[in-house]
Figure: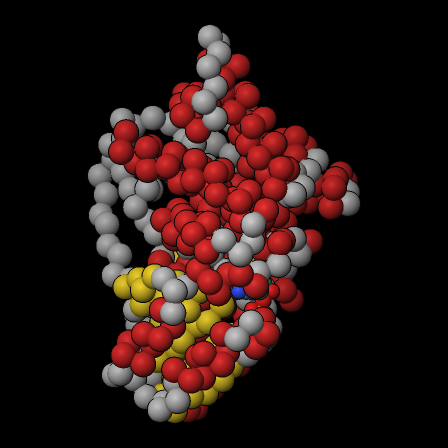
Length: 385
Ligand code: NZQ
Ligand code: ZN
């Protein structure tokens, strides 16, 4: 096992009616930025619950944080926070609102240069404290230090990580997910699934605990995911999916093991160029990447095939390749598309996509072996087409 450090200070309040904990969680803060997205919280009653919980606070609302949060929008919130001397940010939404608020929190305190530099690799020294009410379990943002921000004018989608971005608390009430449209439920199964594979389907380093933790999340997603689609009002199913999503990217399963993340890096470019949902991009790229990197990932693919899909062939090659087919079939069974051509992306675009992924990574090759460069990305995209 590789050496590691583990730090995760996020307080999780999980369960029915947990939004009721807000007043006690916010007792040391007065001027609250209540940030949310495009209005789903007004339709499903979460907005009213939050307003009631914040009744004794000085509340400033900031709405309109987009899916794939936009830098220019977030900078307006930064101005508001500075002008009104906000002392706490409450993010109410999915990964986009939470990621957006992580950026706002860091940017408010970032005075040394243009806040865009936070996304270009400059570390922030401080941030406003942030709390979350999660409405879409998928990204794990509620329990991690990562944030992904888009800048459409530059066709960019970039991530940053800061120790100051950990939410102070995250409220996870599974019943708030009943109002999710089916497409977002599907996204909320596939994104955590791929977060796990990015940390699990690499090469062996003798880490049986992390492997089994990863397999447990994958097995649970495979079991519970279809139930959420078939029986959308089942609270326990929603609770299990919600907790899977947090555990898939809260840092634990990735400690001491190699990590890949090439599927995500290629996927981010597809979102930047074609506006596909984050998880839609992953469902396309993961099976293709596993096929392309077959020889390098084979040992882990065999374990995955045996323990997650119960495959029992005498040939390791057959187990590993069937495991990839099963992965794609699982995504399709949920209703996800798994080919670029299904989104009408032209084959002629593929070299340009590969080039742009490498530009964003500043020429650094991707994957756990740092061997996926422009040619390999093109190869993956061709398989995915
Ligand atoms: O904007 P509103 O009106 O709230 O509607 C949202 C949005 O349109 C809607 N929604 C959310 N909760 C709802 C709901 N609709 C009905 N009922 C509810 N309870 O769902 C739509 C999508 O929301 P969004 O937050 O964009 O989705 P998601 O949570 O999948 O977040 C995606 C973003 O997170 C980034 C992605 O790249 C993308 O930008 N990621 C963040 C990560 C992290 N911070 O660790 C890791 C991930 O790999 C990912 O990259
Ligand atoms: Zn993701």
